[in-house]
Every structure is written in structure tokens, then in C-alpha cells.
Length: 387
Image (tube, rainbow, N blue to C red):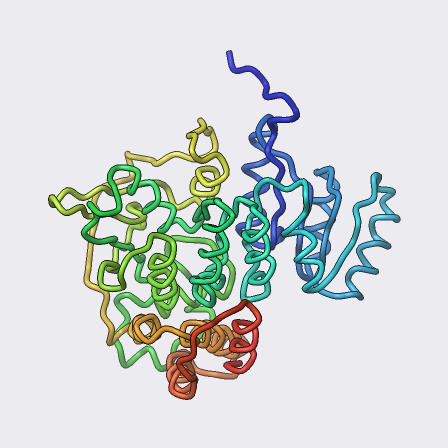
């Protein structure tokens, strides 16, 4: 019979982006393992209704929202509901920092969408927090700086993204020098078989209809353009210390194999699992242990075939742009991310066509100087200039 862990061994979490898809699923994992995890701080943006429910369920010390107006509104709603004890309420960049560096937090889950969570995640790594990373922008924009901060603090940065989480698991089967290459799998999104000529007329609704995963709007569009896979190549370079040419992408429509590692002797280790983000989230939170879960499991009876295809640069020009940005380095990966975020937002608002996304990104990259970042403020400046 399992013994309940004593209160002093319960790991406390701070979550950046608690009301988003990953943040909500992270809290689902925490609530399923109350003997292992607690929550001390949450940062959200505008979704006060969701955040209010999270505050009611957890004994929080600090919360943060997008701006001062929402902070005042949250305070009013908490008083109205008679919630006690009352958490400290912060907002904006300083609020994100207060959550990410909370002294009682053992693990900081970085799940805020966009570059908004970058500085808080960097500071969390710098002060020695274990970072469970879901926010792609952190390593795309500032991978070298963030990984250096984590190494200096003697902490590992644990990937939550299903692909990098899979690579992390597979790498436990060999040493770094034994790795020939990493193979990231991609679903191919909703336009894997769409005639190229038809891509010019893609609608927002079509691009948001992902065949396998339920995700936020931006990452769903990034999956349709395959920019998410381009970002993952850049992330993998920093997370695992691999050369760009050691990182490949293969289209795998079933999304059952989340990634593979090929070793120098020809052996390939693959990590399989259901299309459910609670599995990689739980792995990152409980690492280096593996903890039993009744929430998710692979349904082998539905697994009939595993298909693989080459990722076409012609169909997915964003994949080419990401590789070029990584190869040139400096400020280009940061500009790649910023331009993508702006172009995707314009497409979602129906101000720009689907094929305009890579066009905008390519123009921005062409005007970005290849300068190396020395400090995190350089990243913030480059991001603003690219936008």
C-alpha cells in the first residue's frame, strides 16, 4: 500500500499560463496526484472566469493577470465570492516575474503562449527553479541564454512538448556521444494532402481543424504551416546539445510515435503514447521517477498502422525558414518567432491569407541583422524590432 507523502516532500508549482490548454491540463495532473504536488502561484492573461475556479480549488499565495484593470476586476470577484485566504494579485511583466520566481515554488511550468513568458522563465532558471517548459518561444528566441542560466544554477530544463519529452525519454537509453540523430515526428496537420494550389484559399476554420490534437489557436495554425516543427528543431538544438544537421523531421499522421532517437549502432528508440498532453506533463513533473496514472493510456486495439512520409519544404516553407534562421543564428530565430506570432494573429483575424504567413516571415528575416545576444534584454529588444 502506498504511503502518503509528508507535506514537506510535496513539490510546489508555479504555473505561467494557467488558463491555457497546457496550464489547465497541468492542474489536472496536479489534482490527480495531491500527495505529490501543490500549487502556490498562477499567472494568467484575460480569462478571469477560469482563473477564479483555479483559485477556488487551490491554496494560492500569488496570482497574476494581464493588466491592472483585470487585477482590479479579479480582486472584486474574489471578495464577492468570499474567498479566503486572499492571494496577492499582480499583473503584467512584474506579475509574471513574481509567479516565476516565487520562493516556495520548486517547479515552474512555463506554458504562457508567446514571448510574454520569456523573461519570467529565464529568471526562474536563473534563481535555480526546475523549469518544465511548454512555451516554445523561450528556447526559440533565447535558447543559448536560458540553457546557460539553467546550467549555471545546476538545474535541468525538462521539456513538456510531446516531441521533446519523447526525445528526453529515449535519450535515457544511451549517452550523448552515442546519438546519431533525433527524429521529430509531425502529424502533417490538416493540409498534409491538400493540393498545393488550394492552399491559397485556406480558411481560418480549416486551418484550426487539427486532425489529432486539441490545442490553442496559435499552435494549431503553426501545426498547419509546420512552423511548430521548425521551432522544435531550434528547441532540440539547445535542449539536447545537438548540431542542426543531427535533427530531422518526419511526417507521421497517426501522432502515436512522438519522436525517435537513432543511435550510432543503427538502433532506434521510439516513444509511443496517446495524443494526450497529460502524459508528458506528468513525466516532466515527476522526473526522474515514473508514477502510475489512471488518466491516460494507449489504446492498442485502435492501432492498426504507423505511416511515415518525408516533410516537404515546398508544402511547408516555414520549415525551411526555421532551419535557415537556426543556421544563421544570432537574432534570426527570435525574429522568426516574432514575425510568425504577428503573421498568425493577422491570419486568425482574417487580415492576411494563409500563404501570407511564410511570406511575412521571410521578409522580416531578410531585414534582421545577425547579431549575437549578450543578455536577456537584447532578446526583448530584437523581438520588439521584428514585430
